[in-house]
Length: 315
Image (cartoon, helix red, strand yellow):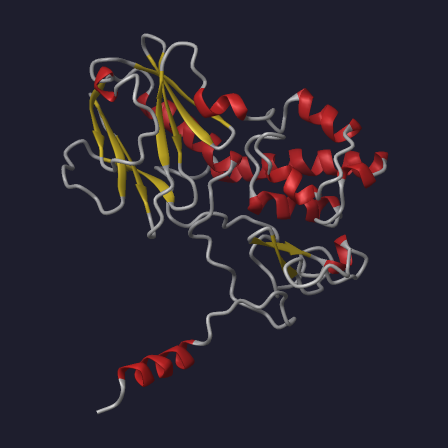
């Protein structure tokens, strides 16, 4: 009889080592899995619009907390919601906001594995990975659930005058304050990190940061302080145009928010495939616990960026 450890090692060899190359080899690769991607401004804004169209004016019938740790607040209690009317749904940053009568509000953050299903009110089964389910006096019920093993999606009950986690968010990407920051800011950190910092600008994450910097023709390792006036205007235009186009694409979606997102990305997750502008192979580099996709020809003058975990030589 073969040793279990030997059999496990053989299976691992058949599957491959599982290690991810730091940069692509140039050969075409399968597109990266978009499961586990945090929904960003376009996905959350379009979702808020769909929910508003379906449920604005409906009354809460029941709230079903399905994960003990997902509710991040103690007061107000969720038991206050039944009987109250859903006035509107909106978005702030990557948060979904449900505004309720009596100045109550519900915030939902899906994190990486969280998604939303719209269900018939007749569904009563407790789903795997369920976070919370909201039932109204008409269809659909709204189910928040999580895929995978990590449990990071959360929801908040907010009372009058309480902004909760929204208080720490920076301006919207389309707000004048963000345009002023891009045009006059002197931040010396890397632009990719700046765009993802929710305290600086709310709603942009890893995916759209890649696409924005590709469209602007800027290295993800550049800093805002290093940009000249023309580059700053290119960056601001790229932020607005990439997010606007993505929002238009998301508005064609129906229903909730499915597990797989990002099917309209230009470069994010597409390392090893041809750049849509110049045709050279897209590359990726590990940075701050995640991966950045970029085009050396369009963004870095042909330079292959160094992986910051392994080298500090290339800057």
